[in-house]
Amino acid sequence: MASTDDFQFQFQEFEEAGNLLGANRDATTISIEDDEVKPQKQRRVSGMTPGDDEDPLADDDKTELLSGQKKSAPFWTFPYYQTFFDVDTHQVKERIIGSVLPWPGKNFIHLHLRKNPDLYGPFWICTTLVFAIAISGNISSFLVQPNYKYVPEFRKVTIAATAIYSYASFVPLALWGLLLWRNNKVMNLVSYSFMEIVCVYGYSLSIYIPAVVLWIIPYEPLRWCSIVVALCLSGSVLMLTFWPAVRDDRLRVAMAIMSAILALNILLAIGSKAYFFSKPEPVLQAESAGLIKAPTTSM
Picture (spheres, rainbow, N blue to C red):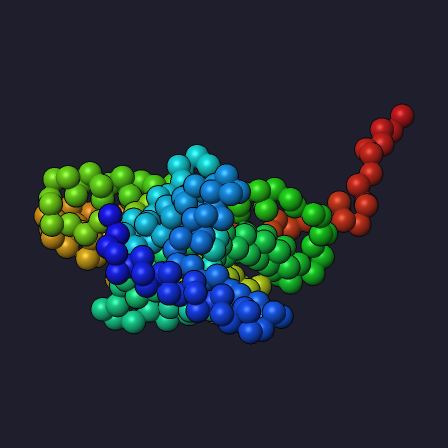
C-alpha cells in the first residue's frame, strides 16, 4: 500500500500540470516513463517476450569466444577443411621464407604455425613442384640432345604428381600415427596434430622448386650441388621440427625415426633427379634419316 504522502505528492503534480495547461493551451505534455518499463510495454503490444529479439546464435558465439572453446566442425564436412585455407598472403610468405631459411634451434611449428596450420600453401607448393619437375625434365632432355624429338609426355606429370602428393600426405600420416603411438608409451613426448605435420612437409618442399629449375642446365656438378643444398635446407626444417618430439624417447627409437625422415627426403630428391632428368635414349641415326630399306633378294 502506498502512503498518504505519496498520494498527496502525486495529486500536487497533477494540479500543477493542470495550471500550466490552463495558462498555455498550445503546450504539449510529454509522459516520461521508466526506460525499462517502456520497452517492456512495447514488446507486450507487439506480442514479443523480452528474450525474443535476441539472437541465440550470437549468444552461443559470444559464449564460445569468451570461454576460448569454439566448436569445430566434423572432419568429413566442408567447413572443417575451409578453416585450413583461411590464411593471408603475408602468413604464406612468412612460412615459405621460414622453410627456405631455417634458424638453428627454432621449431617451425612453434615459430610460424602457432596452432594455425594451413593447407593453402602446401597444396600450391606441391602443385607447382609437380609441373616444375615435368616441364624442366622435358626442357633438359631437349638441351642434352639437340636431335631429341619432343613428344608431350603427360605421364611425367602423372608420375610426378603421384610421387609428390604421396610423399606430402602418406608420410605425414605414418609419422603422425607413429608419434601418437610413442606418445602413449612415453608420456613426456611433444605431440603434433596431423595437419601441423602435413603443413611442415608441404612447406619443406618449397626449396625444391628453384632447385628443379636449375636442373634444366645440363651440367651435372651444378645439379648435384643444388640437390645437396636443397636436401640440407629441407632436412634441417624437418629435423628441427620433429627432433623435440622424439628426443625424450629411447635413443634407438629416436634415431630410427629421424633417420627414416631424412632417408625418405633424400629418396624423393635423388629419385626425381634420376627419373626425370636422366639422359634420354639416343635415336638411331638410320631411323632418324629414314634410311632403313627392305632387304632385296637376288635371282
